[in-house]
Image 1 (spheres, rainbow, N blue to C red):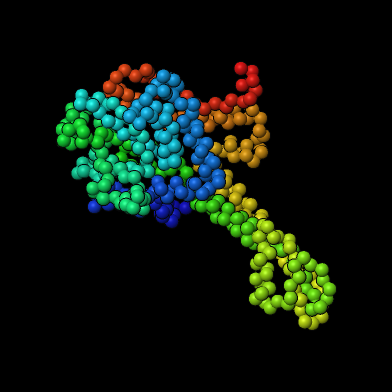
Image 2 (tube, rainbow, N blue to C red):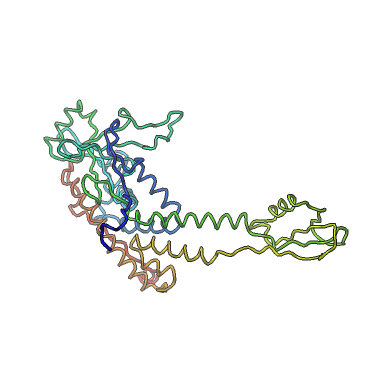
Length: 387
């Protein structure tokens, strides 16, 4: 097949300009992070894989314990606290943002985590350069604080300069802002897609499968709570002596349907509906309520979706452990941990490089220049007992 004959693929992310806000939209509705976060949260496999992904990116924290415990801002956040927040964003969106504040000498004195879903790229200038990151607490414009609805406008959005620790640049920005009190600092915005590109989540390619899982869960819930049928309906002639816990008089077609509805569901399943009729042809008789069973179709669909979701996260070994094909021994788990720690090494290095960039310009000596994140390792009860 020639490339020209292949049906055009739909773009995963659109980046239209929102001129009145001076930003590049993060997808057509400017809500890509919020939308994709909701999708993964409603997928059993997706949420499980994402949680594991976060844990392995964060690892066991910064290798240097003294640095890990260093307080980095006025809120009391330590380096490990910020690492945990950054790991969550990087796993969820393949990007993260750190806000830095400077002193009058142009040296960094504070570091804060900024939720990546709150950040948007500013518009490019004539040279194609993005100089600011727009930050707002809720781009959907639905969040409330008291009775006030928070809506993004030029006045409510914070436009913060991108990270540039050059002292001359910082001091000029401070002067332009009207002094240190009015200066908003800078944002180090990190994206796997590039310096000025919106990233796609690592699981973006399987959002359909995640939505499929949500749909299957809804079907299972509906069938369990509403559609489990009674075992059947006993039809007898009026006046016959039938012993029943709740004997009713004759029903018309509407009342029969209502009675059937009452005895459906997980609590009432397998109860028998008793119906009396006027004529005695072919009575008494038992009418079974049999339905079409789609369990096998649902099971195949669920397994396929689950496997693809695990694959998107690079967690094939964990999927095989879940299915039982690899067993569940300590040796298998040790290998799975080592394998996935290797897979997530790129993400940890992204964080390490970001911290290195910031702490080269820290206002005081830091305990280390090694910002290595210790990979997560499996610790069995046997190992603990031996130690």
